[in-house]
Length: 154
Length: 154
Length: 154
Image (cartoon, rainbow over all chains, first blue to last red):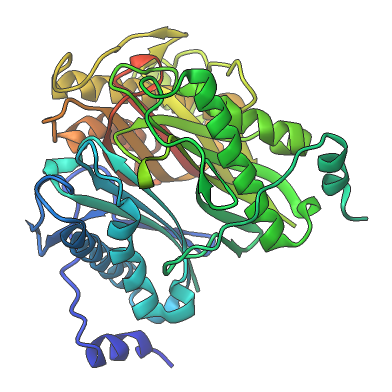
């Protein structure tokens, strides 16, 4: 059986962006010994940056949450592209959530929930992961959120 | 044989905090294929945040070291809770130490030693890990230190 | 057969620095179950810090790229020291690139390319890795770039 997660995405009307191809000497996903590493994905949609600025200054925590969800959707898009079938995801092991944060903004966990909730919404218990959420000084091209992942795969 | 590490903790009078339960869609520890991933733990004790502020502004490097040790104690508490027996720890593979840093504070390694020393104190050679220590712009709820871990387990 | 990568380094005149020995309770490399974890390496050469300051304020993106390449050379030096033979590298799985960034500097990917290009230059397709590049508030001793790695090994 395959395509179970794809059918669930269709039922829940969760659309995935195109998987971005890096224009440098790195790759979006490497699979080795049953573990998939996913490069840092940002809050872009089909290559267009959607949240550029700092959370706590330019964006609210709630907007940051949406940005993290979008970065999470890019993680899933990259996994689908690399694995062929999202049913191969056995367990999301780790998410690192980097939040471009205003100096006094301390709600990184609320922002990170955008990515965390998405993983559980899509993969169920297999999406229940460990995570770190930190506030960083800047992110590539000034985006609000970057998320990377380590995933156990079949 | 089991409980060796527990006995050592008792002998050295090292007390562990309660393992905090996340109130969101992530989990403190995931074990897969002999590797345990531990979510970012902060300098709290039984849920109470003990060091809130920036190292190099609100806290000295020495206080930061204590905060990192406390985050490390939470890592160990989470491992004990997830593994049942801390003797299952074969090797601490990686610590990431995120230090909420004043702009000019550059002693992140000294701060990180609080967590590093603890791992070797508890696990001996099995506690000798790789690590990264970085200064970040903010951390969840403004805490001074966050530490996450990857651990090889039986 | 062994020494293939060493011969390539000689041909390309790529010199490696000495592998730094940490003066604390952590170790540069841990190998477990075919995976090598490498501690955060900085832009130093034989122990001397070469780029101290912020990218986007004290250093250009191009200088940051050189700093990231130097951190990458330290990663390779640590791998050689730990593995004995660099031919044991099967795949570079992940680089985390932390860039000490001025508030408005957003070219972290350009900086990170210094390390990424080096991995592919040395290891070819086996050097093609996943990565995250983030801008941080400070780094140990004020260095411009810190890079850590996870590597699949024989």
